Image (cartoon, rainbow, N blue to C red; front, top):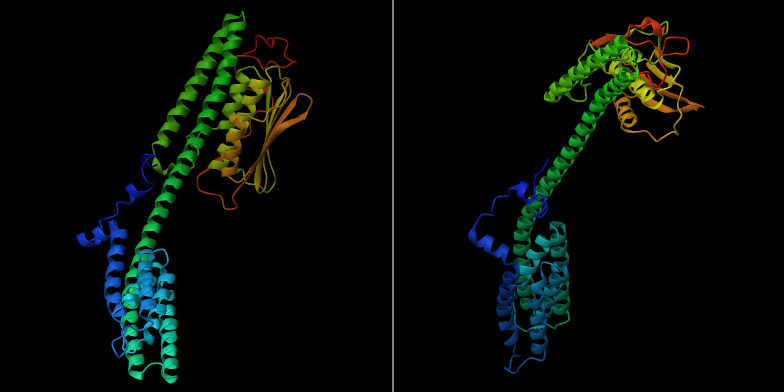
Length: 450
């Protein structure tokens, strides 16, 4: 991510553009108003001199002399806005060139040289060539009409049209070359700015995705383990049986060590740039079995049922395996946290032809349903990464259900894990505390159960 100050111009520091070549060019680029003023004065000087000395054959002032002077001043003054109004300045220069045709002697002007250049640079090459053709064509038509009507001589018409043609052609050629290069450089700079913006956006998106990924793994590791540890320690402190308390404490320590191993594994994967979105856990971790055993060890009546269809493969890809394990883990964690007096927690994992269905259902829910915390949100993100769907909510009075359906790839990858069936009977799982169901007469009360 970029560490650029917010007060700095956006992306200019990152572009690191070289200085334009040439001291004179850099000076004029830094002072555009001064350049326009000097150019307007030069054009006025070169154009106003022949226009103001316009005389008839007898030496007396020509009636059109004053209007030509005024028109020349206006047209040259418009050069100050040639960057903002290139087409207007261009049309004014051709109007002045047409007015000069009424002179008995040819009068030239450099104004078309500057305005044709401005039209090509500040509009487009297409507009410059189109304006050149229309302008010269209109000027030639006007000169031809004045010649046929006897207003001006043929030599005056030819000299005026040819001189304006050459000036306009040179200005257009230079302007097309400079303008094309200018627009090309601007396009490259704009593309560079766009790439820098996209780079910063991709960096922010990647950082947000990585934070979400770490948050998911941290929640899955810490939340489940701490929930089990809290249940075990509360049960150990509530029971008067010393042996049971020691067993609960030992189970809590074992859960903490397992969480520490998972944390170290997660940190190791985070330091490896090749991890991508892969699960941050060792490949041989059986999350379903470990989550069920932890919940049973804490005294909760968990029943695990696994099944497969007749044609479904028993081998699951690793990411699907871990997604199923996280679904079971989150469902058991929510049951232990929000339904401490649950009398049944049913876990069902079914491997079908094209997908895996994981379901966790528990009773004993007494609180009002909520929109879900970080656990369900992270679980939905995890399931979405493997193309699955997740539904969670109440299905009846005091019953909560969590269902995930995760598709399996048609081509089975090399790195797969096998889903082993767990014991269906909760009492068959070893643990320091009894399951705590109503059928166990020696089970502790909800206040004593860890």
